[in-house]
Amino acid sequence: MLLKHKLRALVAGAAMLAAIPAMAQQNTYKSDSTVIRKFYDDALTSYESYENLRFLTKNIGARLSGSPQAAAAVEWSRQVMEEMGLDRVYLQEVMVPYWVRGDKEIGRILSGRNGSQEVNILALGSSVGTGTQGLSAEVVEVQNFEELEKLGKKKVKGKIVFFNRPFDNRHVVTGAAYGGAVDQRGGGAVAAAKLGAVGVLVRSMTNDIQDVAHTGNMRYEDGVEKIPAAAISTKGADELSAMLKNDANLKFYMRMTCETRPDVLSYNVIGEIKGSEKPEEIIVVGGHLDSWDVGEGAHDDGTGCVQSIEVLRLLKAQGIKPKRTIRAVMFMNEENGLRGGRKYAEEAKAKNEKHVAAIESDAGGFTPRGFGFDANDQQYAQILTWQPLLAPYGLHELNRGGGGADIGPLKGQNNVVLIGLRPDSQRYFDYHHTHIDTFETVNRREMQLGSAGMAALVYLISEHGLNGGSAKAGK
Image (cartoon, rainbow, N blue to C red; front, top):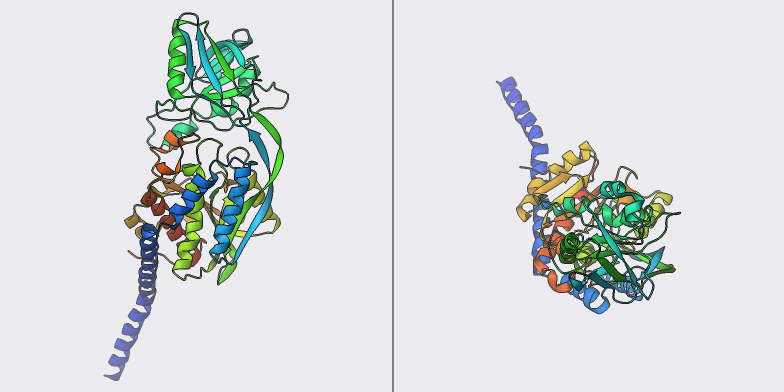
């Protein structure tokens, strides 16, 4: 009888021991779920981040790297994070390009058959100017580089090349359409100049047909003539294309007084909460502080900056002492050089810092749908175990392939996971790189859903690490 009782006790004890990991996992899930709920409760009822965005966009405004406004944004963000009582706030020096737009651009179609018609253009970033007298030449329209090459020097020399490839609007994710069209903006001037062109017009990078020109950066190549390059609104592009069909000999007049001045000293702005258990392991959350010189840089990328600062505020508001160090980084010069992102990665490598993860928000302040991950199979499998914690907040898309321009240079350092916040993309390219990218186009709740989602993911990574085999969320 005694032996029978002992056997029963041993079986019961074994069952209890087997249940402990499952119980601990369930308790961890409940604890994480409670913290995340509090992040959302705070973010959705707070106006602090939205007011930060208002100040950045309305009081400082457009802040192209090298400009006085960019310098003001550096000082403003430093002060905001210092007033939060973070463990450390500091500036990281970086030399940046200083391109100046000059006078308002003039774009005019000159047709002997149809007369003169004004169209909206914007000089592309880093472009040379036309001189104060402007430039007038016949136009040759192409859809891609292959068409341009087939025309050859005989048909291109002395003309303005008009790249008119539109977005492929069959893509549901508009970033894919952007990726399929943007090469003409970046490399069009070089390809055209090699064939003797005197200028370049590029159809604006947007899904919409609108009378708004979208700027963006372009590049030159050593040994190739630098020719002026401008974006033309999609409405203007359609009009120019239609007029060319009726008058192949029409001319286009463009006047731009832009110029590149000597590099300027600027800064990445960094604020951090030191990790309580593994301070040497770093999680970055960031956006880029610079913007184009038109509009207010609200969606691109004011929202990403204030969301990153908000992640730290949400952690502090709950009294959370993260296990790992959390850094908010306001990168400088993403738009026309990426020097801030490169400098940050360069110094991280020189200091042998261990970055566990880096999250970037640079796709607008719209409703978040999830995240994209540049991670190995083991890390990604672990991330998927957190899906039940994130899905209730609309974060259903945890997909492979992610990151961002500024965190991209960290790739390969200590197996870091690169992560991009993925908001709804349908409206982003309506505003991207334009004068209509203003504070009024940002919805507070949509932006704050992104802030809370980023805070949730940062918290989970900080608590459990990303080694591919830490605590998992329960069902």
